[in-house]
Image (cartoon, rainbow, N blue to C red; front, side, top):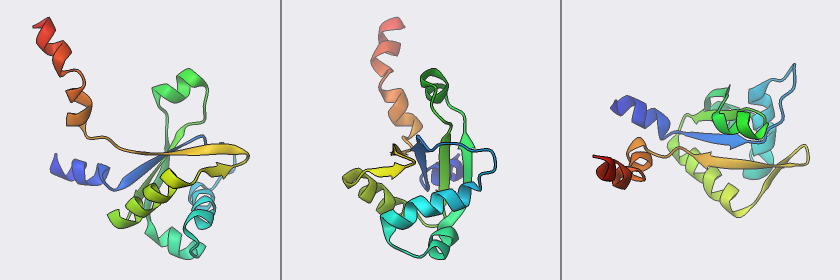
Length: 120
């Protein structure tokens, strides 16, 4: 359980990244983050552990492209990207990219604690 929490603490979710058939997701994300971090593309590629797309209910409901999840080698890189993305908007193919951080399960469940107490 603790390993999963540590793994979840090291990744970011990106929404509104347009999908294409022959896409190399790592290269696409590196290009987007080069403009944000002002580093070399190779340096950014070294910071990626895993890059993959995830289908979510939100994306299905709102007919958006699937989310891109990036797990970083270091947590500090994730924090830097998250802080910069909060201040500046990221654009990709004339769409604004949203950067989201994973919330802990306990925090998500806390919102419904009052409801569980009422129903019991």
